[in-house]
Amino acid sequence: MIAKPKGTNDIYGLDAKKRKYVFEVIDAICEKYNYVYMETPIFESSELFHRSVGETSDIVTKETYDFKDRSDRNLTLRPEGTAGIIRSFIENKMYGNLTEPVKVYYNGPMFRYERPQSGRSRQFTQFGFELIGTDDVLSDAEAISLAYNTYRLLGLDVVVEINSLGDKESRDRYRKALIDYFSPNIDSLCEDCRDRLLKNPLRILDCKVDKDNGLMKNAPSTLDYLNEESKSRYEKLKEYLDLMDINYKENTKLVRGLDYYNHIVFEIISTSDKLPSKIALGGGGRYNGLVSELGGPETPGVGFAMGIERTLQVMDELEVNFDIKDNIDIYIMYGNDNEKDTACYLLQELRMNGFIAETDYMNKSFKNQFKSSDRYKAKYLIIMNDENLKDYKVCVKDNSTKEEEIVNINDLVDYFDMHI
Ligand code: AMP
Image (cartoon, rainbow, N blue to C red; front, top):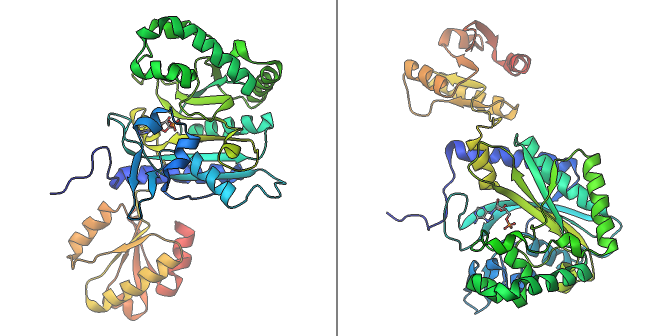
């Protein structure tokens, strides 16, 4: 037997239905917020992720699936969605004539070579969205609100942890403060953090290895290094979040793992005390330098990504109700070839008129067809016999009341329209 690669999953049965339900909720809410679905390739030039996600990020240094194709090109399976969207934004010149911001969302597989464990796999799925072309604080608030409300519609109680990294000037001052703070004790940190100290000290705060090191607790806070403009942006954002009644809290240690963030960064955390630990269900932030970093014109943007599997896992653990249809409308039963012909016609007719219709394909006895209809949880049965069929009629049985009615075949669609 050939097994699936480590860190991947087969998704089928009820799990697949739950997942589809989550996608439907996502599609519906994105439509309300006026975001348009978009797809980019699952693999891109390796350089794209080096330039966007950052040379010093864990994702790029340790976790990417890199390969060469048959023409020796360096390619990478995408570890996240924003870089591809921004590449496409530039390549397709979506920046031309930006009278409105570009608002897009995506949903698809991402790949990171991580140690597989609960909530962490090598192929996973992210829903994400990007709002490109405006720097207005209201667009930060919109991004947080869309992320937050998606979880709420899925039935999860969450809190949005927020922090501001400020503009470039603020970020540079903060960077220096971190170097000054960590330098004297750098030996107590892990090897990666020693490497991060000069390349990207913000990342030290994000380190999975050193997260419990006492040094982290008293590390400088970003907020003390914000200049006036960055500070007032952040205050305005909090006003907007209050106006939208969004449950948020400040986390001054939140920096997020990717290089491209500035101003607002945020993460969505489940607030349920039934979960063993704090679980990050998704995160995002503003990335004003990214479009120009990737060769486009200076264009601001903000975005968010949600881990689908982790969200589903938490929904399961908290026994959230999935609004999943697991029954069919009509099961058609027949006893001979003539009736089977009518079943064939009826299946087509009923399905094309919007009903979920099913029949037997395994030459089952009548008794076993009844059993099948129960397994499918059919609301109605169509039961044929030669006598009724001569008058172009069938018997329709309501499976919940057990009442039966003889209905003309031409009237069946109207009948079910009224009853289902
Ligand atoms: P990130 O792009 O790292 O900010 O991740 C955004 C969200 O994707 C996280 O909050 C997780 O829910 C999810 N995620 C990230 N990495 C993995 C992984 N290896 N397996 C499953 N979900 C992941």
